[in-house]
Image (tube, rainbow, N blue to C red):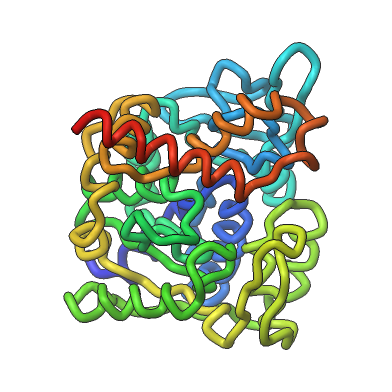
Length: 340
C-alpha cells in the first residue's frame, strides 16, 4: 500500500513524543482533510503530561482516569480527567482536543509497554484506520540515545518500536526539527539525512497558512511549547526564540512547517533503545532496558524529582532540572559500572 493510498483510506496520527504532540496530530489531521481530501483521520494521544500539568512521576495509569471508555485504547472525551493523590485532578491534553474536535480521542497510557501501543493500533486498524503516522514534534524520535541535550527518549522509543509490528502500514513524521529544545534543529536535519541515505526518506507534507486561525484557537486552550513553533513559523516569526522558561532556545526556520516522512524500519536500524523495547510488555520492563543501555529517560527524571522535591503542584517551580538530570546520569553510570 502506498503512502497516499494508505492515508486516504484512513489514518491515525499518533502524537509520538508525549501528551503535547496530540495538538500537532490534530492540526495535521485538519491539514490532511483539506490538502488530500482525507475523510477519516483521528489524532491519537499518549497520556503522559509534562510535570507542570501532572506533577507526579510517570504516564497516567488507566486506573486514575475518569469518564473514559477503555478497551485496547483509552477513549478520552471532553469530560475526561485524571486524579492523582487524594485531591489533585487535571484534564489531559487529549480531553481538550476532544472538546475542540467534538469527538473522543483514542489514547495510550504506556503502562503496558510496546504491547499496549501495538494493541491500541490494532484496534484502530480494526475500525477503519488502515495507516499509522507517528508524529514527533522536534525529532527526538531520531535520537541515538546518548546525545548530551536529550531529555525524554523513552516515549518516542516505545512508539517507534511499536511501528515494527506494522511495517507496511506506518510512517514516522518529524515536524518542526528541534522545536522541543532538546536535539537542535541542525542535528535533527542531519539525522533525517542519515535516514535518507539508507533509503528511508519517503517524502514530506507542508502546513499551509490557511491553518493559522485554527492553530490560534487550539493553542489558546492547550499547553504545548513545541507545538507552537509551526504556528509561529506560519505567522512569520523566524529565528531563535526561548522556551521552557528561557532555559532552552529553539531555531524557527521554514522547515518548521514541514513534516518529514520516514520509513520506521530505516529509522530504528540505527537506534539501540527502540530495538531493545520491541517485545516489552510493561513500562517497568522498558525502564530496565534503558538502564541496561545506560540511557537516562524522562521517567528516571520524574522519579528523581519525586525523591528530591516530592509530588504535587507545590513542586512545579522549585525544580532544578539540570541538577536532577546530572544526578540521574551519575546514578545510571554508577549502576552500570557495578553490573560490570
